[in-house]
Length: 106
Length: 121
Image (cartoon, rainbow over all chains, first blue to last red; front, top):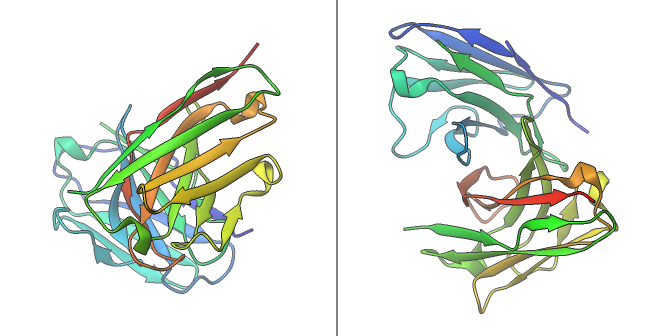
């Protein structure tokens, strides 16, 4: 199975900060990485697909990059509604696997 | 508007069975790979199973192989997860999710609200 290692596991930041979350795959997976945001008690929400494509309706302050084994999602200027848990996911091979999550808090 | 509505969760004893359903609307159900993803209390996301649009291919995470079955009824725009021989470690919120395109490798573009399965005596 492909392991997805996210870092950091938790992150404290302030409104207006620029924040980057990283995800490393245990083997090369091309651009088959997706990023999700989850708020407490809610379903995950797709933010970025295929490493760098912004999902429709997601604010442009979110961006994704990377290929092969190293991927990042960046929030250029944190807004109050961005405080949540973020997950990366590889869809290159079965089983799909998720990173352990990054809890972004104030 | 795409909607996915899960049902069928609840409390079940270890070794018991449960069938989850997911009613889909707002898109051509028969054109998309569908899947189930679960989340144990306070834990991260875990992919459980996928099914091809025509139902001819099905994939499972190792921990549920031989115990869970995924199926679909395209005429009813519905997805199912039959869970047998349930264990305490299967306790989780189960999400129904639609892939973003007609390919197994697409992202999970849409998610249901989830249904809680609790396995306990």
